[in-house]
Image 1 (spheres, rainbow, N blue to C red):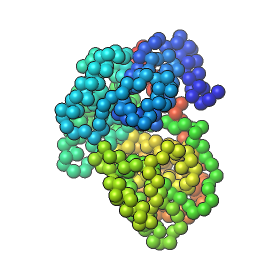
Image 2: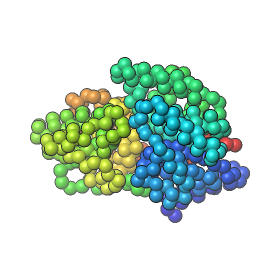
Image 3: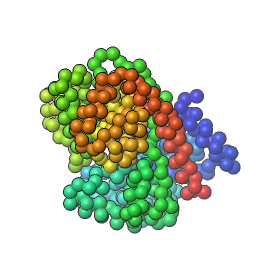
Image 4: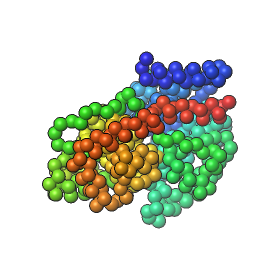
Length: 397
């Protein structure tokens, strides 16, 4: 039995034990990008379908529509822009979404990430959707304490959350306890309506430990190429270590996110690559193989992470991790156990942590084994799916 089939079977048995199969109710997922849905929510939607729900997905369709349709899910294309700031265009997007919800009449809408939570909740409440699940995959850059404009924007979003999230007929899924406490303290979330589900899970079959590859030790940073992901600090650390004679390869994996206002320009990535300090592989869809080629995974993020998926994948693949002592990142990495935590934007500390792992094969292997144990115990996708379906059942009972 394949992993997805096994997952469906366990859910069906659980429903039967609870007194019968789930009635044919409709769940509609709203996610901005089709690639993000496939990467972070497709196993959940497939499991919901396997558990007896009718499932539809509303998203911007570009290159990943086929996997959604092949999974037996109904796909509803939307015209959206993640980086849009034109008020008229943004209200038009909410209007289109409202019309979709009115036409589909789902029993439950599941909005994923900050912008869909805001827009999707407005549209769903106007359309009379009876139940809403809002999943916040971190707080992003908006709640970062940097700059007057971001503080003003975070105030506006907080006010919107107070109105949208605390209505008594939904749940808000938060990925780490730091975000949970912050939203409650701001009055943006009623603790009784919040649910802590740590991350979107990792496929423990797809990501498995492999023996360390031969050749030069390789460190990868795999993420969207945003400044707040700590890319500048990673490059600076790579330059320092190479200048000191450390024999290692430093690799950036990921594309510049053109619709994100914190995107690193392509010309800057090309310049770093040309300097020889780092390699830049661009976007990759074969992450199990990418992780198999490396020795250490690094994510020096100071972004408002939920639980970074790449850290879950790295842990499952048995790779030691260097990351920042920040919400979400420290959910996966326990300092000195399965990796090393450093202060955000501290290049000196990053250099020392990387040097420690680059020069100690035994330590890398020990931390890699612990990472796999933690992934198996706490972050498997089956666990995340079970916890999320329990939220659906409680709301739709």
